Image 1 (cartoon, rainbow, N blue to C red):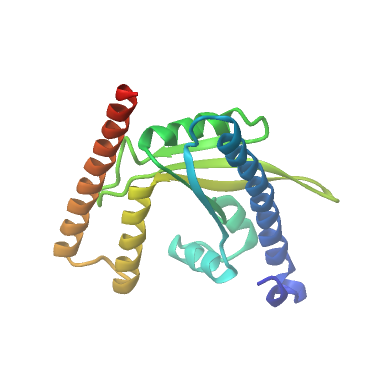
Image 2 (image 1 turned 135 degrees about the horizontal axis):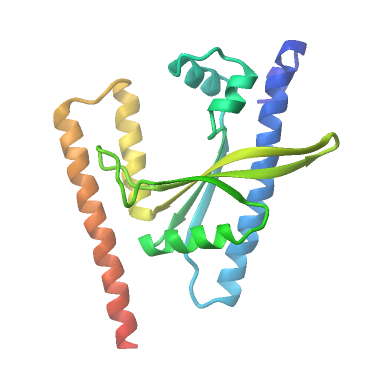
Length: 208
């Protein structure tokens, strides 16, 4: 990905992507340690699995154009906060807030913004919790505070979001209203399933 950005005029873009990659690499290590700690020390681990990505150059410039902004590095830095993305999948909704509390205790994870689409779902039924954090990347030239988006979802929320993304990718624009209605109904069913599974967990715990 970075080899294609080696021309002189593209180097600022290469540097932008590299620093976000470094941020993701460091946070991956931190989360892997927390994950392993929970698996080996605690009775219960709220994290099911973790995924990572850094947006490609084309994706960034396309998003800037959708925002009616010039495709410049400065505009990317100042307006796109999900160049680096991490997704944490949890078992239950309560685990999501446990992970948020866990991350808030990491002294170099500066939480800039929280978007809680669980308590306040999007109109299409989308649920997830988004953290925008600022993470210090240490380079030879100094410290670079770097924005990273962390999405935290349950398994069920992630399943719905993945299918919804594929449907909207197919249509490019908004899906027909009948599809939108069925997606919202599915989101409600999945939310109910999340709640029922969590209640079932508590019922089993009460029997122990």
